[in-house]
Length: 230
Ligand code: DX5
Ligand code: ZN
Image 1 (cartoon, rainbow, N blue to C red):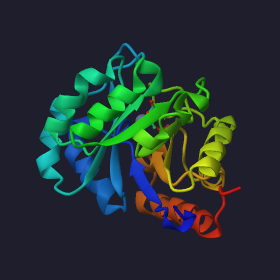
Image 2: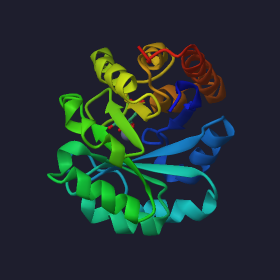
Image 3: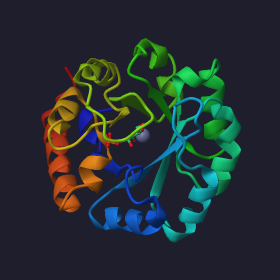
Image 4: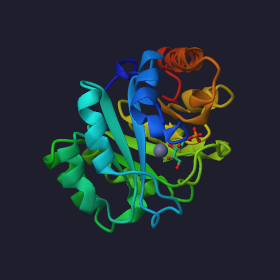
């Protein structure tokens, strides 16, 4: 697939928003220009934190018709939550390659359930752990912090993985997540990421729409120039 067919998509993470107002915060972010929502599901086992799960997404779903919902499954047994997530109306199920011994099976089951497939990599995991499964996935998520908490520092040394994936898979959706904001978006875009998760940099901004628009401009500029195809 040609590089110019890639689309820039900005998906704010609601993790660090006021979770008592999950719906209105989601609406606010969408009004500010978000293309999709990145929902961080944590089980307290795969990561040392707990957030929410498919019952919450199921409540949110009918209030946000047509909005693309990605769940970032930071859970130990990703296969367990495929069916309930599909039932809840999740559009993309992004699970961690480290959390299963049968990545291909989880990919297949997610796809069979009608959701898109995302495969995520922790910072310590080599990109070769996913290279054999790219054909079974719609997107690869390169984590740029240790999963578990928002507001951490961006790990620039993860950009080598993004660059490698972009070079070998010009049409693949590549997402970055963790510490991404105005100061780090250029590195992500230059390396070849086209799906951008941003939590605190958007939620905490005085003008979230400006942050989203700026990040979009940077990513679209790199896509047009064909950066990452190097
Ligand atoms: C971390 C989550 C991220 C996080 C992003 O475990 O997967 O989605 O909430 O937040 P920031 O942008 O603040 O790092
Ligand atoms: Zn996430």
